[in-house]
Structures are given as C-alpha cells and as structure tokens.
Picture 1 (cartoon, rainbow, N blue to C red):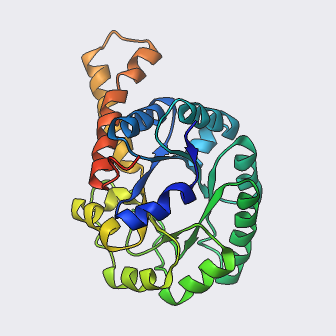
Picture 2: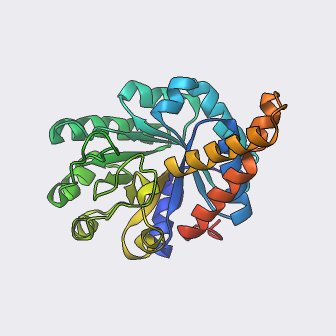
Length: 279
C-alpha cells in the first residue's frame, strides 16, 4: 500500500519545485483514472472527496474506494477530505481511513477559525494524518466573492493551529470554467515570506498554463486543486460516447469509456505541475 499524507509529499515538492494536484473525485471512474495517470507518470497524487461528492456517496464508501486504489498503486496516494465543515465530519473521515483532512473555517472570524482548525489538526495528528487549513476566503465563479488572505495573519495562524498546509486566497476562484484568473503576485509573495508550511491553491482550473508551470518553482505552493477542468473533460467525453453509441444502455460500458479521456487530462495536469517522475 502506498497510502500517504500531505506531510509525506508536500515538503519535498517545495524543495524540488513541483506541485501535487488535488484531484476532486466524483466517482469510481474518475478516481481510478487519476491513479492510473499517476502510475503512468510516476507521480504522487491526492484523491479528494469534496462536499458535492459526499452528498452523493457516503464517506465509508469513498474511503474504501480510495484505500483500495492506494493498495494497488505503487505511487503515493493521499486520501483527502476537502472542505470539511466540522470537527465531527473530519473525525468521521479519519475513522474511515482518510489520511488527510481539510478543515474550512475560512468564513469564520480569525479567532474562531484558529480555534476550530487547531482542534481538527490535533485530531488528525492523533490519527497519524495531516490537516490543511484555509486563511482568507476563496470565492466562487458567479457566486460568493473572495476575501484575500492577509499576509500579516499567516505566521500567527500557522503557528497557533499547527496546520500542515495552508490554502490561501490570492485571486484564485472555485469553479472557473476556463483559465482566466490573474493572481495577486504581490500578496502571494508576502504570504510566502510568512508561511513555514506548504501553500495550497484552490480553483486550479482558473490558472493559466504559465502559472501552473511556474508557481511551484517560484513560491511555496505545493498543492493545486483541480476539479472543474476535469468535470468538463468527463462531460465532453460522456456526450461523445452517448452520441457515438446511441444503442448502448449498459452503464458500466458507457462510464468505462470515459476513463481514457480523464486519464489523459490528469496526465497533462501532472506534467504541467512538474509532478511527473517524482514518485
């Protein structure tokens, strides 16, 4: 088994100038495609269960799926809970076998965010797992606006909570359907000077190719979450499969034909983030 935590892979990513994608999983086919891509690229990988996925599939099922894939993989696989909303939810994930959790206290006042994140960090560490926190608020395309991370709060937040990785808001936005975000480089530079842990970018689908290639070499960003871009690849592939096979009705046959496209898209991201060949 190659089950890993963020601490097993992100510090080395900072040293060697690459980032590990947090692939947002919505089901078996995409999770398997992402691990197959990581195997083909000899790269570590993070499988993420986000809120929409958890609303559809119970945590124990997701955990079993991720652990099974890790058990058959020869590259490091992190089973990560994305945007955990409470201590109880994070504890449930850890009880199921997740090796990493993110507690999202980004909408809370600073003191509350610190207190609640610290509690999750202590819990995760007791399980031998890692914990990601968020400072500032990463907004949503056509939704809630972002609130940029305050560089002056970074060192205090990291020290007080003990987080293993820190998600920051520097112009990145969730659910971008094309790479169009301009990052606040000045804010990111200031944050980088204050953080002693690897940084995380949510909303990686909005990043330009140049940022994907250069951020890991020029900043402490070591994890970049990728979801929307891959959902678009799946949707396009599924539509083509159905159009090309109008008489096909078998769900397994239909869904399995999307995996090659997803694997190819994931492999491209691994190469863009300089993750290939790091396992």
